Amino acid sequence: MFKGILIWIKDIIRHRELIVKLSINDFKIRYAASYLGAIWAFVQPIVTVTIYVFVFGYGFKSTPVSDTPFVLWLVAGIVPWFFFLEALMSATTSLMDYSYLVKKVVFKISILPIVKITAALFVHLFFIVITILLYLLNGYKISPYYLQIIYYCFCTIVLTLGLSYGTAAVTVFFKDLSQIVNILLQFGMWLTPIMWDYNLFGPKVAKIMKFNPMFYVVDGYRDCFFGNVWFWEKPGQTVWFWFVSLVIFIVGAFTFKRLEKHFADVL
Image 1 (cartoon, rainbow, N blue to C red):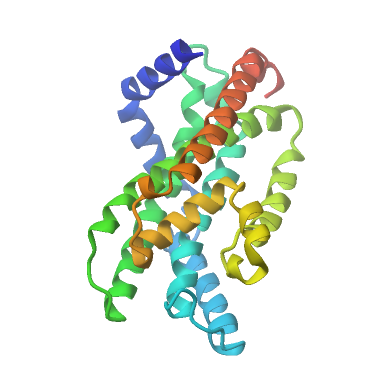
Image 2 (cartoon, rainbow, N blue to C red; image 1 turned 30 degrees about the vertical axis):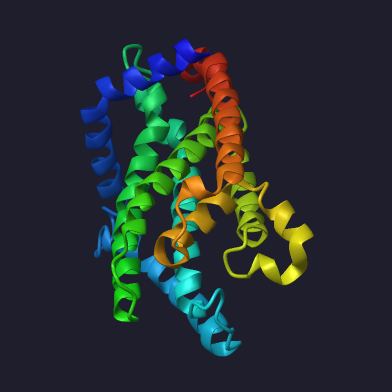
């Protein structure tokens, strides 16, 4: 198992330039047919966030959470979720989108989900900058805790990649899975405390919420912007997240490897 992970890491390093090149190309092609091009990649999340801000922040006049204005609290949690959503959905269909590469004998098809995740990362980095500016405009100062955004971003990538290896492999044979994943993500957004404070429902609900690996990521981003908590100060949640993520990654990679030899025949 560990030997397989090491080989996988070496493959990524060996193909790093190809991954970046394909990711940039994927990002451009996705919006090539529209007049505004790649601008749409940023417009849609901005519009969605704006709607949530007006509905929950001004419509329902939601109160501050953890002494943080609700709008800032919401944005800090929804930005990593958008990255997870976009990365997983696009990576799930990566083998079908690049079917012409899958059929090439010499091509390393295991990098295709990584290509999609990297393409989604471009937009995510833009929104991280926007979020930082939003906090600065509201009187918050640049904090050393911002550095662990890199860590939580890496956590999201590992979790997403593990899931997408499994979903991408199965989608080749069962194309409806991409729609099922989309529906599950809609439920997941409400099961993850992004737009509601888990403390409102008592310690029992809070304990259950922490089993969700995306809870760790969303809560971690908030720790970066206003919580002022380092990830090693939450050892229990950190160990649980990496245990779940590694199990998901191993199962996903195993599924991908077992089905890999049939991809070209089906596609």
